[in-house]
Amino acid sequence: MPDVHLIDHPLVQHKLTLMRRKDASTNSFRRLVGEISMLMAYEVLRDMPTQEIDVETPLEHTTGHVIDGKKLVFVSILRAGTGILDGMLEVVPGARVGHVGLYRDPKTLVAVEYYFKMPGDLDERDVVVVDPMLATGHSAIAAVDRLKECRPKSIKFVCLLTCPEGIAAMRAAHPDVPIYTAAIDRCLDEHGYILPGLGDAGDRIFGTK
Image (tube, rainbow, N blue to C red; front, top):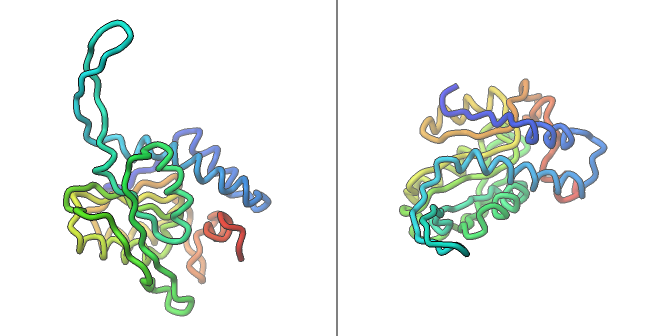
């Protein structure tokens, strides 16, 4: 599928498998989300621009390459996106952070916005949207809809899990936004949950029901 990047590194798959276990504690699940997010960041940010700078080593002068973390924005879809956000910030601590608050109407499954806060000058920044699940696609689509109003330089979407229905919805609404995921699961159930999935990521991260 064009612009759908499956991150199948053995370490990523190992940690995802541990997260799927229903008996994983809140503490271990939260820790694994952070770890897998750091690992995924390497692939998601592979094409991040760098600039050359002079460096003085203990032996001589040389040149090296650095990123400008301030030009990168991680946008967390609340609340579950916070888990991935924390891991990504461990890798790029200088990145700016935006938040989109959305909840899923239990009857219509449509995403309803209740919060939107972004750094300034988004037109000069690359955006990485993070949310553990791309299921029906409603939340991801709504978040990207709002972000595009701010005209960022680029947008990527990162999730732990997705499914054919979620990919199809996202591709139809935003074919220009690449998707990065650790797994493409079988399907959605009648309640809009991914199967086999890993349950409700937000509840498992925060220990709620």
